[in-house]
Length: 253
Length: 308
Image 1 (cartoon, chains in turn green, orange):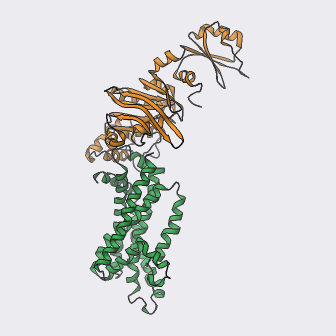
Image 2 (cartoon, each protein chain N blue to C red; image 1 turned 180 degrees about the vertical axis):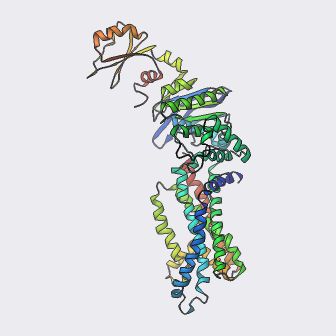
Image 3 (cartoon, rainbow over the protein chains, first blue to last red; image 1 turned 90 degrees about the vertical axis):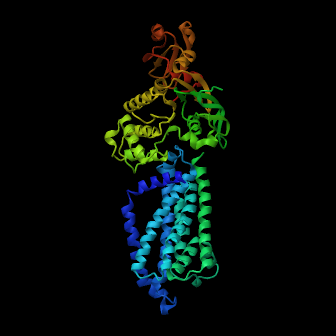
């Protein structure tokens, strides 16, 4: 693990050059989304108070989960491909005592930090928008980090496996965007037809959304919550295992 | 097996699918020497280097590095090697100095020591005044020197250099050679690949000539030239078609005639002695007498030139 921290440190060193921009967007995004959704879309989805709660309270945890997914996915896409193919930093690292495992874990640590910072800012914004009902919401923060990792680990495996950046378009278009729209983020899954709904249950995003929603509304129940955590963690662990394999295949030839 | 060998290979083989890049080679690199793999592109030099750098498992054969097994002790071995890869892997986003510091951190060197080491190495490769510059705008020669500095952060016992001066202009190459020579004097074992015969002659105490995955010959540059070529070479150029030449016309003074696409080489021990005869019989446009080089050794071994 100490070795992985050396890789983590190098990611942070690179991040020092771009952190201002990313923090600004981490603050601006929630404000823009919450304003637009809370005022605009909410009126439509929550007609006649169909949800039983203000729309902003419904959509806030959904957006938090989406942010975790987006950062987790993005940070594991182009940056990983760049480190293997363009800047070749991973090749440089492999001329030192560090191993593939350290490269993969160090990168995941970095993604966890990125998600952690953005999710933290988001949670504070949610409090400011009066979208949080319960102190349980504090736990939504680690859940957001785990959710981010459940995307970044398998996506980094995918990025190492890809031969060129074309595959990312497919990932975002057919993977991330549908998840973003149909995982109970903006409206309850119950409004989706059977078949599509079950598909959503398979994704870590829905589990994250459902868990975070219970936390911010103050209605978590032990076993379902643990089930959600376990399912999200499973994606992370399997993703790590795959990532080590695909990175090895690409870098040790 | 030689006990003092830092790198020991027997029957070393590397296959990629149907392609055999390295086809069963034997060599030993001794402590403190500069050892070279000379050969054209595609000879298997880089594949050999990647196996020594522990980032490419051998398909077959024995490979021991610092008396360890690269397939098992890769990280331990890599901690004692320095690697200068063929393609620069510097971080363009960071400054020159930051590149060295982060690299030192990979080896577990403390931040404080890393900063001291970085400054020493910048001094050594004459980049102190560029310490705070980004990497991107540096010249090719400066990037190479920075890569060499980076490969030295861990005080390696063996420095692996894959085509260290390919793509550099002559002046930048000489600066790199001079620094590498200094390292050799300090006792660092150098292992390098090159397809430049002048680089091999400048730097290597001993080298192997590689061709198509195999080692064709082994020895010191001078020894190889003496053994496998004549003392001198007469190069002839012609305005039009190259004539057919029968070495018999030189009364046994020419050991071998080599016809290249653009010139003809006459291998002889005394070039000046046959020049009058050459003018009289062949009427060449130009005649150049020079000493034999490793290029000629390679030509006589394989019938091809090093740089196609």
